[in-house]
Image (cartoon, rainbow over all chains, first blue to last red; front, top):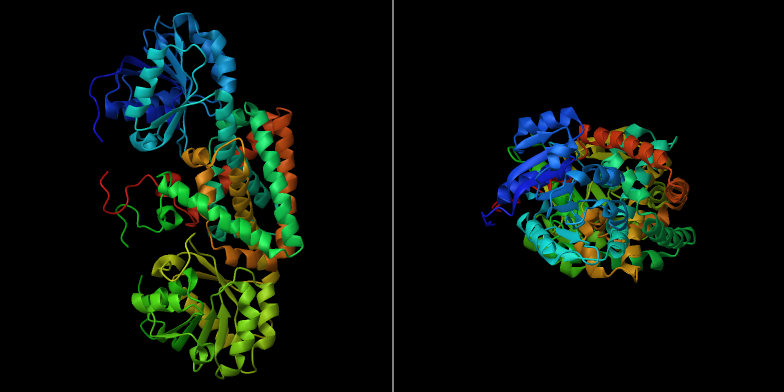
Length: 314
Length: 314
């Protein structure tokens, strides 16, 4: 990949340095997107780690100083904190600045942040569809967004130049960019991310609670499929709590469909209806092929887990 | 790994050459476990592939010839076919031979195969907890069973020497071995494999059926979590149909618990009960840690998907 070396921003401020905040810092450095990267976090320990890893030009325990003179401010904390952060930083934003975020829900972000954005500041909500199950300031890496989609949900009347700048920013972080209505985003992500996470958390909880199968057995025989769910169910608890609390309608709608469909399978198993099972199991293979050929997942068996790791002898 | 070069068996016959059948052939060759590996499949195309790949010493379209003089016969077809295969091959088994299988359910296998096993032949049911989402005679590889568990469920009165031989066989294929009651196996695997597969198939079906989110969107934004489920939901349809039809009670029992637990989460989302969500999401991280430290999954983020593939430039 080649990158334009002309920085898009003088000062980029990241609010909350976890997996996504640190990945944006790395990706911005890789592509030279900002002359100065400022990192704010309320945790002194996180800031110490950021300084040790050296991907920030300045670290801040105080919000006002972090956002002062920033050209782009990105909220990277759990979405439940956005309203209060936006209110607190608003008086310190410079005229012409862009405020964005990486929240996994978008209608609630428009609702919570929008009213606090001052006249003359541009608000361009964003959601990069990328991540790992790991959290914290050491978890990010520059390649996280490569080949993944970033969805922007600009409110009506968003400044065209600010929108273009944010498209450019995410392209140069390695992503493809899509513009979408926030409500449609929330429904699409309920299907492709929120409900899958909920059922992964749920099956891991169910397995943990069973009295008849021990935790040791669950762990030993997890390669039968269960281990895949535990990866997703190891994601950040606060981030995911906030997503479910802030995308209630879409999650409940998709969940109702999921439960309805599951009842059909339950009934097919109870009555020995093999055709219903076989037909579904055949149909689902096509979607996998679509995802692999769109470059959204590895074509290798077991996600390439059976490949030797770097430095490991086969 | 080092292997004993003394073959355990003169002739090993594999019945049904898909992912597991071909993996056993490769693992047996790697460890020198059989002087002769015979592969039976009802499909001429599969046998042609086996010959091209060269991991069999003989290929067979006829069951009688395949099992004749075999010291170990392993059923590697979908479990729904076991009863008929056992009945058909019984008259051709030699005295002292061992009959085993790799079926994902065990009580039904004991029920279906047991009655056909002739006097003087030893029946040792087995289930290697290993696999990928791929199928067919090209899908197997020698390392598939390395570090995974293989569960043996010998019926009461099983010959002790035959049981020891099968433990030895699976150890030398790279596995750890556990002895278990078939009913307990079926319950444990309902939790760690069968219900996870069912809900993966189900969520992929639900996503495919939604009118409000397009298939293109589901594919594009699948990196939000959904893509993991599509890997599991790409597993072999016939094999999985047979597993659900043959582990009805345990699957319905675990599924009832799953649905009950999911209702609690649904209610928590509806009423904005963040604590219930947060508490579950925190608890599930511990099981992930257990699985990684037991060596049953990769510690790398995203299963190591972000690692460059062999021969790929970073």
